[in-house]
Image 1: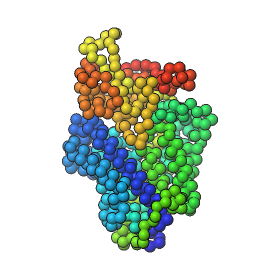
Image 2: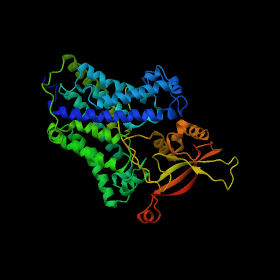
Image 3: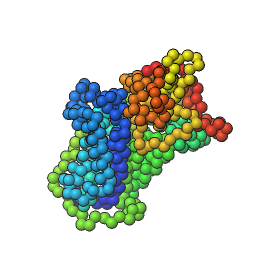
Length: 469
């Protein structure tokens, strides 16, 4: 079945599967560590309340059938262990049907988590992992050459991811068109990393070059993914390199890493063979007829579902990061259609004084990733995802993003809730709960080179006023 198989991509499939298993592992590990405080039975937005008002057909999930914190933990830990097994290659030599089942398990588990994750799982990389994870089910085991139709489907994901992001920028903020967005972005992005200060301090011509290169990569290069080799490999390498640049300059969970993972499937076997001295599987076997039929059926379904994201791409009212079906397949993607020029941060403080007055000493809570202490260097967090820290960035943009969870956050801090405090870097009240908690809004700016040298601070901040969600 020469038309069905892409024998030259067997090593690319191997790289893709191993790398996808790593992303799955991080995603499930994040769920294990963070779910109790965010969506657990006593969390900020509890799953039981959500499933009580959202029907199964709208959000299919195991947790629609039953929820308890113990059950959720079991599902998330199963995902961790299953992903580790896939990373070790335990599914590589299984029969086709068993291999498909092995890759279907983490997809079903993670989809179940995302469907009840509410605002904490409302990011584009969540639906991207679900979509890519579903396609990975059909790539097959090592002895069977990867199906060309599934590889094309993965390239179609990469096209929508890059081209959608490029279009939303071109149609959105004017600064993308005049190449000035990166004057602000490295400072105002959701969660700067250790190199963001230096990226922000690059000369303006370099920022303009970054923006221009972004347009080429996202608006031109994606079309080359469907060209012949070696054009396709060149396009994939360009995507990988530019996504690596984004990894160096900021923390975007596993968005950049997963984009690079998908791009590996478009790299030709010759380059992979030069980089990875791995022997090909001996005696590749023909795919079973039922497997070929399943892949053809998958391609037909994806073609139909592509109508909605294509319509969105050509629309002047393009939206970002939207799913058009409950299984989160064939989604639309995009990021930073508008750029914030000013950075604000919500700083939460507590005091032990029963009656606060002008002399009251307020002590700050420190988050793991988001800026707080001006002398604290921004951390490298990605590809791990700190969900509370990301939502705090949105809350600082507008109080509308803080409903309904922010008042509950303050209430749990007043109670010294152990699950919530486990998500923070520093609790100034380790023994007794604070008598009062308040939130204040600050304007944050990166220090310049002289301030950085003289003070050791990475940020300077100015009080805007009290913050009320």
